[in-house]
Image (cartoon, rainbow, N blue to C red; front, side, top):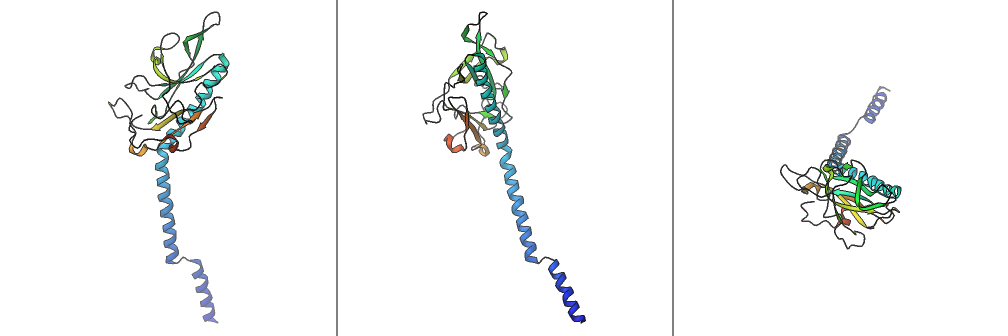
Length: 232
């Protein structure tokens, strides 16, 4: 009887513990999860800024379209491409719309600034090379530029910009045009930001359609980024 009780006791305790093999398996799983987590965190560090920039720009595109419809005139979504030495170069975005005279007549070459605009997050820059006039058809082409000055434009905002335009009906005049931003670095004294090794594939953006709606660029492969891409 005593022997049977001892055997039962040992069986209960044996079932309650872990074997060496089981412990090794658990340790291996924990190591794998920690490694995957570290890689994920590292990958998101750069991508978060690009995602935030794209989301902000999409919302601002819609604001430009609404401004055009609301004012019954052309409105433009502008990106600063003026002075490479300025801190706003390839980072500042503003909206302007056509001015009217005292009698309400549109002034084609006079523009009013909507607000102070937005600035892309730290380490994120507009890519003038990858933002093209017609990405969808594959023809590419450079976006039109505008020299913004005088009139209702504040001095600090005057300069050269590339633009995306909406007419009074809210129709984009360059359907298929792309807006692309990427992760980069701008060392002290450098006139232009550069694409870092870690950020060569960290680009994102969208295509804007005739009706003003946008479609996200789902993969950097859509952008045909050259392996020699070094600057924005």
